[in-house]
Image (cartoon, rainbow over the protein chains, first blue to last red):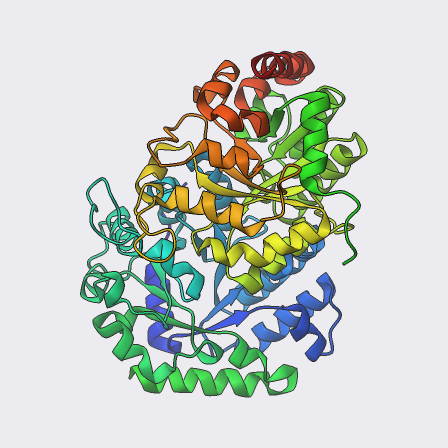
Length: 288
Length: 288
């Protein structure tokens, strides 16, 4: 692969500067499709996704389609997802594919190939990945992302309550012995992209906005110093407010992507553009 | 959903009794497609998968398509996967979709709907899932599986070396405090299906065959007593031998699915059926 003209981290930095940190979650839940008057089908999910892109164009810089809600419909759902991705790209919006893939190194190459290869049908700008098989198992995908000008967001501390038990477990071997799993993942991701001092890294973390980061031992100063972008779900219906971002993430707040789904999508198709605009405005004010 | 006629655990037990414990991994890696003289395309992956089903019919009772190698080709790859699943079902072979999905409860409902719903395009018999967001986040998918007569295999201890650090971490809160992450996951999965004393459970574990289960604190007696099926990768090229199954898994060996991929697939299309037959025979002898 030839060197990309511009890294994902640089493109993300541009979007954060120009349009702000709001990320619109695209979650065509069965109940939302019904509320929007759409079929519970691949065609309904496609329509839902395209309306979200339309409502976000020029207002929000990042969208995060939740892959599961397209995968429900099998290959037809993936066709819909491909169209939504293409529409986002055409509108100049960054796409984070929220797929949370995770596997062995050679298998991760398959996933990285699928989502992070220029010209592939499912081409996105970045992919969420899960480290149950070790952060090391994601190293090949990270290399692929960096070489292709794409990004990864590795789950470290997620906002669902059932996650605490695993993510607060204490590492018992290796260089991160004594740290929590979430903290170890955060440090290991920073180590996977050591050359990121001048701009945002292309390797980010998922850190939920509703959890006690300090309690997990996560050092937001170190995250900021490494230039690690943070994808932060949990805003809106899940309880966190845009005005809390600086308080929660401290010096890392300037590289936080504030992701909201239900609080925007509940506005329905007619209120959607206004909802995106309001959310984008709130996020800009909170971070200015 | 109406009560299924027969649970996944019962169907799996029937297959283990009648055809033995071999599971044929279907991994259309780029290099294997080339070696087999097939295109590196969705069409090539489809052809690869269908030949694996043909070679397994009547000889092996379970196949495990690796979803990443179909996902590489986007919606066209998923269409190929749907055909491979349908061919397996028509041949009376159980399909474990190796997708390692993992997410929040409501999102997991989407994945369970995709892979574990009778009549859905991607219908499989069982799905591999990953617990980074907590075993509790998989409870809804587990309920869905049990109600639909389908199965789950939850990653507990995987065979890749990078996984040890996370999976040996020590749980610091809750009822499994003091146990390793892998052991806690194993116990929590058994608790998700308490009614399994008379037959195999439909909720299984992934336990690699090349790792020190006792060192992880995993109690194979408890796994056997809970009737938990075990999907065990790591045979063949990864180093474990069929003759080691009883030694590794002790009393749980009778519910182990012995998964081999590369050592079978390396035989190429012409030698495939013989390779499946030989592997199936070795596994039957080792477990008889």
